[in-house]
Length: 181
Image 1 (tube, rainbow, N blue to C red):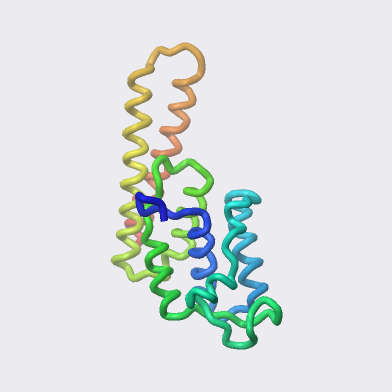
Image 2 (tube, rainbow, N blue to C red; image 1 turned 60 degrees about the vertical axis):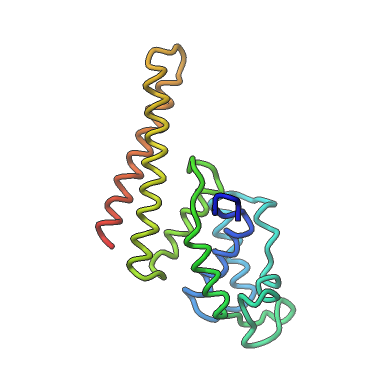
């Protein structure tokens, strides 16, 4: 993790793989690898940063284990270990870096939402509250910048209004989600 307890790209891939296995139960190696690759590619596009973590490394570290077969070579059936469950909890609980508009943060937020239902209700609420706090901070920063440049020539004000509207929309969406938990 980064110093601010947010996920690095390889840890986002770990979160994806562990979440897929926790959610779906024992799954073949090839299916897990394809599901992780498909999901991360659709959020971030092809990225060398995301290709570094293999399922073999997760197996070596004791986060997953083969229950039928040995690994990639025979398309083994994989499942999450108790150590992997603990790692999943730590990864899904990681902070999201501000501002939240870059591709890695989008992937982390999307993974949190994909696997949020796997957490206890209190942990779900904590995660949503942290995301609300993130967007409140982002809204405060953008609003402050907008207030300091009200009459600048060019398109800065329009762009900031656009960004502010998006953040306000996200805040409203997360507030609604919080109310549904």
